[in-house]
Image 1 (cartoon, each protein chain N blue to C red):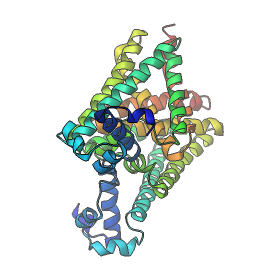
Image 2: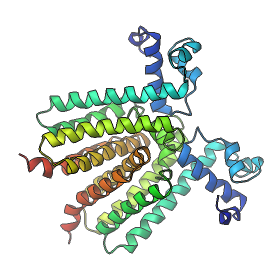
Image 3: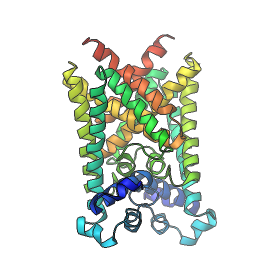
Length: 198
Length: 198
């Protein structure tokens, strides 16, 4: 962990370390002792901050990751000249991040979401809230660009599916080729609806 | 487990049970004792058939799942009047399967692939082989439909990303809405290239 991050309060150190371990090696594969050893933090501090233990901690990691990714999306879209360019930029940035972290860091919640969907209902619900948060943001941006709401929802689902599928393929194939293809597909899918408005 | 499957040889019972547990609850979350208890099979038989233990078993589960899904793809495409219809049918069938299994059964390898990509190199390599197997099948079908090879590869990556992303979203949101949207997007993406040939 970078030195700057070790200056953080104990609670934040545990949260950041958990986020990294969960997204890289999943929920069941990450032990609480590994988290507190790597944070570093006294083992007891974890239960002090999250009396519900691992599941309560993971739910907060999912929600925090959701807010972080939404802020990243907002920043990239707002910096782009238009929504279509912004979505393309987001996919480009996603590919760069996956490659820069040696194919370890992709979606902040997908590794855990895929693993616990059938087994840990509170974590599935938290993951669903995060996906809906992201879908809502893109849907609203499309509605603002005068795409009808039902169509905006359908397009948002497809764009998020492309992104999540590409993250999985990039990590597994150890290549950014899937993200490049998915980004081009996202732009191709959005173009007719956004150009109709232009 | 259905009665018919308990008539299977021990090795197959272990393999089928492992496949179900791995895709529903992941690799780290599935214990060998749970597998042999549910198969059912003597605990020692697992190491008899897979001396390398859990990782060797999981690698075979991944490859077997890959072959099964490829055969399913082949059957659906061959039953359709054309490739575009067949791809649409595949997404429709995927949505029906996810819903029919109460959002538990989706891609046979994705749950494990996402979990182990950064931690179990032999399983990541097996997952990559399976994704390439599927990508190769769709790419060849597109080339047969006179789509240029580089474009066929790019389209195949996007279609598989849509499918995998939609599986994750369906399981998490407990809805087939993402698969419906992804299927429509897949058909929309393929249409210009396949209609150019018609």
